[in-house]
Length: 407
Image 1 (cartoon, rainbow, N blue to C red):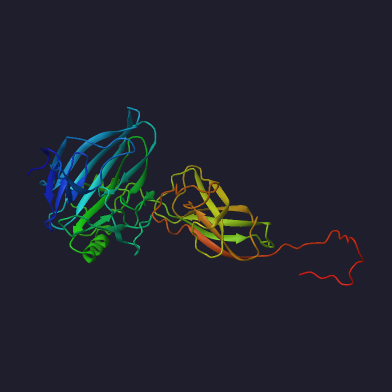
Image 2: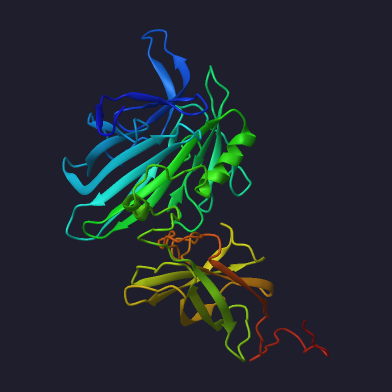
């Protein structure tokens, strides 16, 4: 086929490893026959990457091929807002099936056509038609998807193949997802903050492999953009990618850390008392934090690891005058209330761009970064019991004792 050759969807391509991929009008990749309903004869397939938002699926009959027939381009479509109108966000998709390296690359091209900035949450997910979808491994080594994973491996549940699926969702140096979910969908959401007229690209990969070991190796390679992962992409497309470092990105992410936390000299942590702590927060990333405020939460813990059981006891907010440039810092002093903190060995955990928290101190990972696992600094404190003074003592119904003691 030649470039810009109109096609009808669905459309099928086969990768180097002889695995077939069917591209549907809503941009899904269907793979793996699951079942045939005897009543209707209709077949169901596992699928990945349906383009949709919270209200409408993405459907388009307009598509064509590029790169000698190896890349399918689905024309832009405006997204609905759920009330019969369109959002000022257009989404198109380019799906490249590698003939030489055995993977599929998806470019989700999102453009803000409005005259004002716009925030849009773009979600992609796996769909196994109500069948279990088991995550067998992630890039962090476990079987639970989290914000800092670059890839995940799924069991392929079907009645006629035994392949494993690797999905590559981000690379080192790119923006991390805003949210992830485990379970049947293993969904990944990217929060896009688009200037007027700006285009951003969410790039992701998927590959079928004969075994888990091959899937793990391919996940690592694609996260590093090896295997000729960017084949056929224009320089403009590479510059618009946000979740991988292509070397020519227009927008690079920040990386916030709590560099230090010091209790003010002379102050002692006392149960039900207050202490003042000076924090230094740094952007050690390659890109600016494009926000006018930075948030953080303070937790009390029995150890130096933050989990959902730790109690948030304070928060902070720092005005940034619209951005925080790379290699810059801010300093802030907070008065922290140790109410209901029992005496003994404790830890104060300081989290910038907090993910956990309670109803009062949780900001839900609002600042999208290149690394979401280094936002916490722990410092050890010894909480003392308060000094008690006997102000008055009364003895009733008897003579006073000869000796009084207390512990």
